[in-house]
Image 1 (cartoon, rainbow, N blue to C red):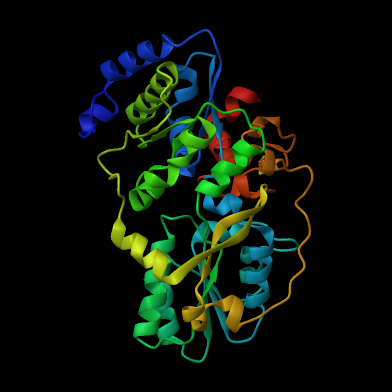
Image 2 (cartoon, rainbow, N blue to C red; image 1 turned 90 degrees about the vertical axis):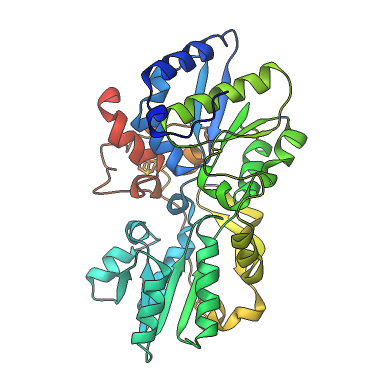
Length: 366
Ligand code: SF4
């Protein structure tokens, strides 16, 4: 297998043709591979990968978009904070448009609440320093990729005594959700494992998957050749009956991951059960701030009671996140629900499956 390292190789026509020929060799049975990274979902549809594959190979989108899996109760809680006096909410942009039970942060901002989009956690810290009379709440979402930065922010706040900086954590870890999907009975043959998450974690977090469930696992990059090569590697693992964890994305992922970032994660966070939009409560899938750092934990320092309502029943985001349905199976897709007027989180996020279908496939289905 070629070790893809140079830009010329990423979209090399000859190499793509060869990979497709090799993949087409695997006929005779159906294969279901799930990607659990929003970046992969976008890349797969942007480059039209499904149209290059034989019909017996299905790519399913899983719960890899951090905005999509953020529970409604988290949004409701953030909205409740935003309505308090002397509270400034800081958040990455996509989250503002995610519908809560009755409102969204975007609507609240339009009503005059102090809600600010930031591009890094350091900006949120700066806002806290500049506004000592306010509590600055940073909305921490995302997987093992973004959680270390939040951990560093909390350590910085402690070091510099920025006591008005708080984090509301919805950070999550990926493996328990991957287990939950298999245990729910979704028929999979392998996982296209997330590239960015794996730069932090390395490969060990997936090793139980081939052992326990017999599924092939390959950590993939984001270019067309990366994805096709990953599919071929998965097929070969199955053909040779040797399910394991392999790294295709070698130019970015080391087997041991980023141990420094892992140390920051372990220092500040501990695992807890958490709610995933569409998947429900999953044990040990969330990251709570450790007791030692409670002064920076909004859940502890600014208690608030919120009651959330269930998702709109017409929105099938939950089934899409489990790989059971496609966005085009939703009757609201591209009618009531569009990126301008999203009904569910999968249409809000630039990494959501519904938005990927809307961007790259809606003309094929309407
Ligand atoms: Fe939900 Fe909209 Fe996707 Fe339908 S198209 S599943 S309503 S986000």
